[in-house]
Length: 104
Image (cartoon, rainbow, N blue to C red):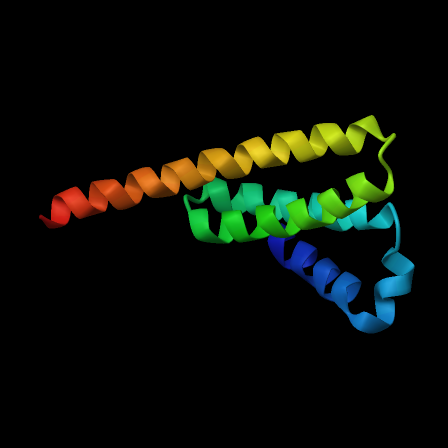
């Protein structure tokens, strides 16, 4: 149920008519929601949806980090997110290699 609320929030936040209301650091809230959704998908062992949500959050945080270079929290969050994405990509590749071995 919580995921449905987060998805509803994202739908509102990403609607073009609402973009001005979510400008600047409020975009960080959108990134936080995407990260929470990614964690939920990751815990459910759904790597592709988790990666999608994490990568969407990463794009938002990268833009904010450029716009606000003196904000250490943004850099920390972005560093964590980059490492998380790298780990998930590695897990996905390992799973694909395992599946290829099983198929042969």
